[in-house]
Length: 119
Image 1 (tube, helix red, strand yellow):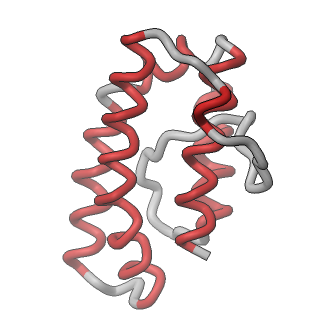
Image 2: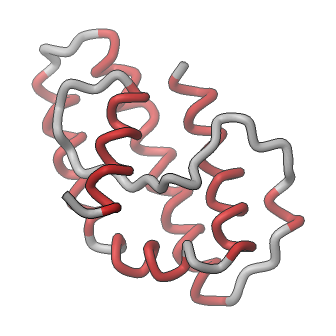
């Protein structure tokens, strides 16, 4: 199993999901990021990816909440699969950008919102 798979599985477990949907995550993920994302300047391509990721999160959060409330919710399962496929499309770019410390911290700060809203 590669590093991405291990990180993804850990993130899914943290969310309490029983579905093996490929959700983006990183071992650099932290639920206790105290920084503002404005502290971490990004390149234009990095900012484009993060804008896309934040829009994706806006769709993903209610779906995960619905799934956690009712794990048998077929619509939520279908939405998780669709959103996971979308996320898979930018996985390679995300992994590349995570090598940049500013991007990694920005990503953690943005992802903290999802963590807080889901729990």
